[in-house]
Length: 414
Image (tube, rainbow, N blue to C red; front, side, top):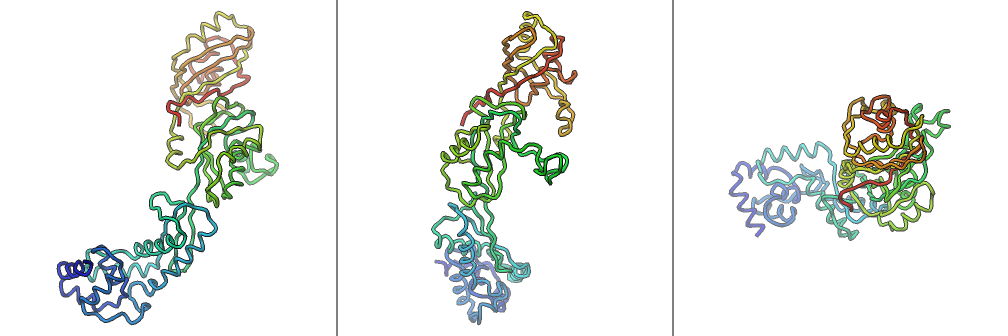
């Protein structure tokens, strides 16, 4: 069937002059067959042999004499062995092969396509990717994956070298932060930008640890990865606790050598390593979920301990607090974050607010608010940058003594 398909392609698509060009071009069977790589089913070597017979061409004396591949076809098995050796240091479930070529080879290939005017040629990269992939697949017993490979082996045929590109590993979970003064992610020193200076005692960091480092450092011991990156569904202030069922996050492990880890053991190890952070619900994730998580905007519930600078009548407190349910507030960028965020106005909704009066000068507030609401500024007003505010409506200065995130109110739980 393949021979018949090729005869039809030669007679129907190529005039005699183009066939003469093919006869005069010294090509190995593989490169000759690749000129008609999209015709019928079968390998390019088989195609080349049929074409050689149909056009009454002489055999290519040496594979190295091939005007297209310059002998590289004869090294496919060697490249496959190099690829398999390079993969021995990594744990993975699937892979993909890619190749690089000397630009002169690709230019020669394109010139021959133009001269012969063949309509069904296959690029040399496609053949090498496929053939090396088949050999590696058979050699290691793991499948090729085109969409989301764990590793990609790049074979450089020009320098006869191999580079392995390792896809990151993603782990979803939720974290609770039980200590204040800990940021969510690594925070480089503002003065030295991570290089180390007197201000940061040579650490290069504003804070000595973070949720990211606490979780990531343990994960690296399990995966033997190179580094980690933390993706949280928003973030709480450094001096705030994260309570309830915790804040969703995805930990990205870069270049993991080990992928098949026991997540329950990892969860236990993280929780035993510190009293500051607790994780739960660890499971596998991927890059697409990172995008969904980062774009999610769930409401949040907070507990705020407020201190008034003067005694406030209980009736007035209840009246003011009761008036805020369902209220929309306008907030300019808080002064405390203006060094890193543009000054603009945001409209946010206070969904629900409850109060427990501790004394004429103290109260606990439970506030449920739209994502992106600056809760501290809603309480103290930020010198009028948040309108309306509890401080403004009460007519007294309010100081936030403590703020905790009680819950991330997701609509759809995983």
